[in-house]
Amino acid sequence: MADISQLKDLEGFVGGCLVDSDTGLILGTEGENNFDLNTAAAGNTEVVKAKRKTMKALGIAGGIEDILITLDKQYHLIRLLNSNDAIFLYVVIDKAKGSLGMARAVAKKVEESLDLSKLK
Image 1 (cartoon, helix red, strand yellow):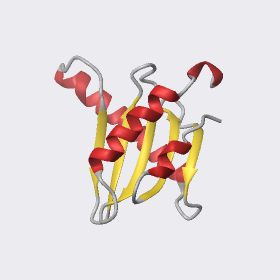
Image 2: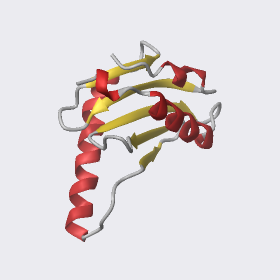
Image 3: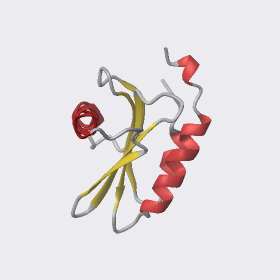
């Protein structure tokens, strides 16, 4: 499993995981036990696939940096890795306690610290 433990230092952190977007397989987890990361990984894999399909249909070149889903009480951030865009980092933070800017910054730091050669 990949070490994404830096995520827990985020103010308002609820949960997060590293996911293979081809299969929905979780490569690393961190966070509260009451948040179903397996379901989140599978569902957000479909979000990434749908966005890629839409971009292709629209003729939009380039890659996805991140996808933000804003709920009433939470931010859900999907960050595709620059080093391997088949893998994404999924982070959930409480809107009242956390900062979206900090979540994006920490997600980038986590990405930079990952050794993806150990995952495959």
